[in-house]
Image (cartoon, rainbow, N blue to C red):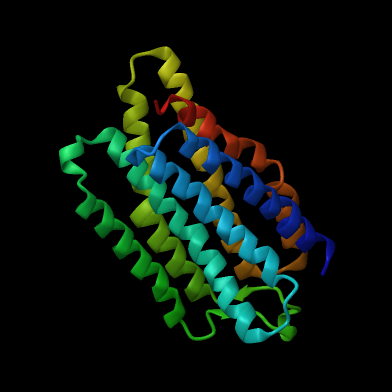
Length: 230
């Protein structure tokens, strides 16, 4: 395993796993209301994905590695739907965001992401790729289109609406931290997806260095709203 991959998996994603697990615990400790549940679910989904990634990095069975790599990516993508529902609950009246609608959003997005499995050779990860994921461009484009249109753009749109709606400067400042935090997460999603598709060792190394400092920014999601959930 080369140095860039060690940084990316065990420092960046390992750091994310430990940090997000702690954040999930802190959020749930504050309460069990829907807002707490969805924010902690975002953290837990990312945590589980990162842990699976660290495990399969030392496994050398093509079938197992393929399944675990897809599951890792699936959880990273699916975690974003929890952010969307979290924001929708804040911006919309409770009667408009009933549980059936929340469940429908999660199911539709989950099924669309599972559609990535339909791409032949969408993911290649075996001894020929030195056990590094190599994605097809069709796999990459489908993922970007689905995640961007279904969860990322709506989350940003409603988050900005909330920010504009706030008149209290303290709340605006707190929500700004949340915006920076989610934009950082989306940045990591785009960068990691592109890195796996480009499959270039030099870019992987550069990306591993770029993504490492973003761990600090990810705390802002909790700092912006987690402490205010009561």
